[in-house]
Amino acid sequence: MTDGQPNVGRLPGRQPIVGRLRGAERMPNVGRRPRPQSGYAPGGNDSRTRTRFTHALARARSLRARRPRPRRFVVWHPRRRSLRARLVVAAVTLIAVVCTVIGTVTTIALRSHLYEQLDDSLGDLGIRATGPPNHGVRDGSETGGGPPARAPRPPSAPSMFPGSGPLDFVSKGPQELGTIGATLDDSGRITRAVVSEEQSSASTAGQAKAVALTSAQRSALGDTARDGRPHTVDLPGLGGYRVKAVQGERGSYLVGLPTESVTNTLNTLVAVEVSVTGAGLLAASLAGAAIVGVALRPLRLLSATATRVTELPLHRGEVTLYERVPDAEADPATEVGQVGAAFNRMLDHVHEALDARQRSETRVRQFVADASHELRTPLASIRGYAELTRRGHEPTGPDTRHALGRIESEAHRMSGLVEDLLLLARLDAGRPLEQQAVDLSPIVVDALSDARAAGPGHTWRLALPDDPMLVRGDPSRLHQVLVNLLGNARTHTPAGSTVTARVRRDGAWIRLDVLDDGPGIPPDLLPYVFERFARGDASRARRNGAGAGSGSGADVGPGADVDAGPGAGTGVDAGLGTGSGSAGSTGLGLAIVYAVTVAHGGDVTVQSEPGRTVFTVRLPAEPVTELVAEPVSGTS
Image (cartoon, rainbow, N blue to C red; front, side, top):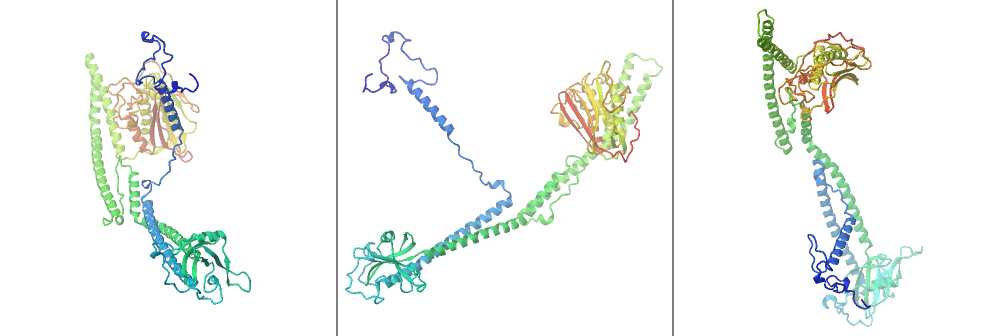
């Protein structure tokens, strides 16, 4: 391409044909662009346009990404503040608006009044300068707002100060310092301009003298309109002035008075208004906070009552819901009192519902206790007659002996269930337990020995401290807690699992831990393990709790020299298990553990994950120096 020719090849849509191979129409794959694949079908030769568009879009996105984001300011949100703060802020804001309106109106009215007074003084000054008004002079209102038309000046105008100059009125007479006077010629230009200042000599102190204006001041003064009305002019070095063009028998003048006194008065008024308003708002805030606090006192009492109600144990046991809002704060004549009265009525209904629930639960517990008590004798009779028949001298077949064995086994299981129900009913009724100083170490040793005998397929470990672990309670019930926890671990963990019983001191508590390395409790069942008739298995099938094979002896932890030898197995079904086995249960073992522990003033918790399950029983520790543990039998 030669010089001076346009670069056509760079313009989109105008690509030259030069360069295309001849005969390309006979060669379909030569000299042609590949077809676009998807979503974009440019017409003609738009590949460069597409490339430029893609680059421009990328640049726009990069610039938009680099653009700084606007900062987010934290705004005072009324819903995030208390009702007291919102009421006080609303009242103070209203007072501030009213004070602002009053102050603004007062300032504007005073400014108008002061300027009227200053304009009156300016008119008097003009009369002193020009003499009596010249009736032959027409002001600007008669000439369409232009400069006043002057009549011919008389040959000789009498002076108000005989023997003085035309601007002596500035420094003589009752004029304030800073008065300005200027004479005008026939064309309206300033011929002479002076301002009155205080003389500095000691002999003439307090008297005024006329000082000529500078050129800059005369220029600013000369810009004043000659319409006979007062105007505000800012003179360099002198400040604001009220200037007026006047004309009379003595000629034409520009007279002016300083606005400093008016400005000072207005500034003082504004400062006083701001100070008084600020002090008033502060006092209103304090007084409003106190008044609103007194008005909202019933709401605070209502909140305190509701807080105390939420702290009551309403989920179980007998509830004495006597919390109420005081009658003085529940007056239906006020809005807040209506809320308090409605809250009291709600508490009455809740109390009635809880009382009805408690009566129903009491009847159920009494029925369970009576039924359990009445079932003990028939079950004992069934077991006795079954055993007597099985041991009799009369010949019986194998089927009969098997049936008698099953009857005796199920009667034994039914007796255990009845005993558990009776124990829970007595604990729910609040019957006091036997109270004495008990050392947990021998109880743990005996319970672990029984569990080892019942489950030889498990590995049993024991960790006891050297010092006695004294608590106050019922030895037989504490032994039952240990038996249930160990039986639960034995029944619901596979053979070969390790179960550890550990006792230690935790501050003012004695802590008993039963650990196993079984599969763990399912997370959805973990919150309900201590509830009655809770089961970890879906079916009611049972398996033999005693595993096959020989088990290892109990490993004793440091500080303990005990022998967990063989003993009589208890066969206690401990309720919900910690494993995934198919053992069934009555679902009362862990409920008994919880009820007995709470009756002793302690608590029981569980933590479970695959490979580690820990049941922790905490009981109040008994001082070792005051009480001595009594011997406890090894079996229950």
